Length: 154
Image: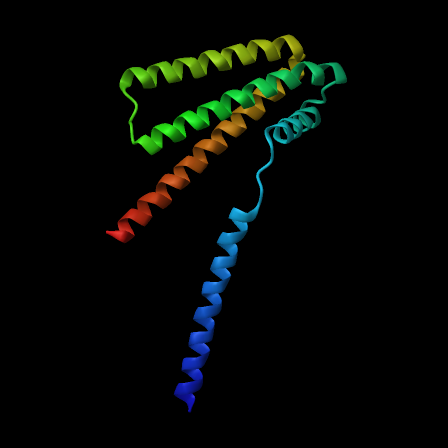
């Protein structure tokens, strides 16, 4: 009798754990992503809070944010297509891509310098560095997780 109760409890626990995992993964897929305009508006509001932007500065920065967002969307689509085609980048393509990215960053920085005062510019650059270090940390964690998964599957 004790074995039967223990077995039923074990089966119930395992089935509930499986259901919970299905729900957790389903929620992620079910949530809708924000539109480009919504993300741009939120980014502008965050910058306004962090940098204490004036109304005129907000109007000047909005097109810069929109331009960056369209470039990012195009780049994501290009990289996704390349990944699906399983076509790796050549050394020249990597150089060109990195060069274009740096040119874009230089251009954006120059535009922001014209709009922001020196205090705001210092805060903007500090926030940019924080984001950059956070992204590096996330990439490192992601690589470690993937490495651990590949070691377990072998």
